[in-house]
Length: 163
Image (cartoon, rainbow, N blue to C red; front, top):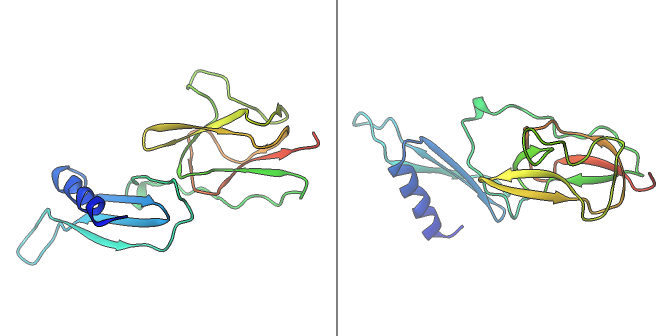
C-alpha cells in the first residue's frame, strides 16, 4: 500500500464515526485505530497501529468489526481423500450458497458440477464475486455454512472428479 492510500484511509477514519479500520491488500495488512485516550484527556485523531505479517491474499480487501464481534470459524478441513479436489476461497469475505436469500443454492451435496459452473458467492467490500468450479465432478462435501465469514484459501467444497 502506498503512502497516498494510507493517508486517504486515515482521513476516512478521522471524518467518520468508526473507531477502527483494518484493510488487507496485495499481501499487506494495515490497521488504523483512533487514539481515544491521550495524555491531554482525549483525542479522536487516528493512529496507524501497525502492519501485520504478510497475508496470502492478493485480492482481499476488507474492513473488520472488533475482534470480539467476529465469530470464529474452523478453517481446518476434515481429513479428505486425495481423490477430492478442493474448491478454495480466493478472497476474504462472506460465503453465500445462493444468489438471494429466497433462491435455491447454486449446488448441493451429491450434485454434479461442471467446469465454469458457479458454485457460490463470496461477498467482499459490498461486491458479490461468483466462484466457479475449476473441475467437473460430484460435490462430495460442503465445508462452510451459508452467510459465514471465510478466509483466503479456506476450503469451501470437496469435489469428486470421478463422481
